[in-house]
Image 1 (cartoon, rainbow, N blue to C red):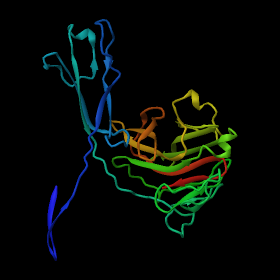
Image 2 (image 1 turned 135 degrees about the vertical axis):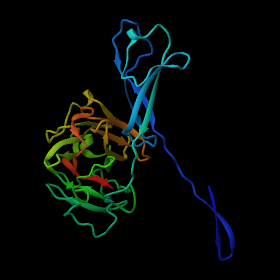
Image 3 (image 1 turned 180 degrees about the vertical axis):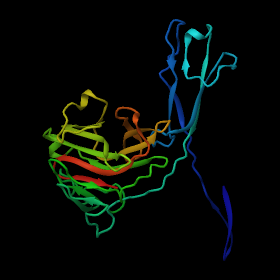
Image 4 (image 1 turned 180 degrees about the horizontal axis):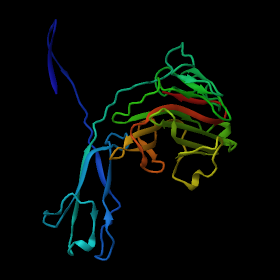
Length: 323
């Protein structure tokens, strides 16, 4: 839209633009054809945000089954039962009302402040250090000068066999609200000597706790590098050393050096049930891979507290990281 405004020298027109995103719902688990002897299929669905930000929870959702003329034959259906329908063509209508999303940033550390120091509710030493590096300096294990993901600086995380560094993300919070995100940009360097030696690996965890503040569950990214590639996968556990079985589970193969975003999306999967999506994004923000460890956590309600972001262990020289 165009908004006219007046200046000291006359009249001019400024333009203001808005970008709207709409969820993209999909029905899960339905085949294109059934026989009347086939068992009933529970109806379920999901939707992504429409902006590349992963899945979004629902304020409400419903299913209707329509005949070939568009008439509703089963309203508010919970299952598609071939045996209860006459022969013919049917359409399952999925109505999805996305939850209201907020994009406020509670905490961000881009290492832009030359006076950055570890401690408090920011990054802390737990076996390794976080050292501020100016963009373009020699902060890569391969000897490369790394350009920061954003701004004029980033950090180098020093190695540790267990524990490593962690951040309190600005302080603990007991408010779930409409959900929250945690993310860290990491430079994956295929020229890293540890990758070439097939010893590269690190785990990165973000967690939630019980309403009383006790630890509940970790959601962990795993990496393992060998010549020409770095594998990325996810789960709920770590053994504090490199996993060598990532090819046997859902994983992504990184074949190009660069900055990648490791993101956790803590969301309502519906009915007050917690689900956590682990997303790997490229520098453009495109989701390359996603995993929801264990699926929606049916026994984990949404009154969870945010816990720190941990570098669980680090088997390599220095790892460049940014906001």
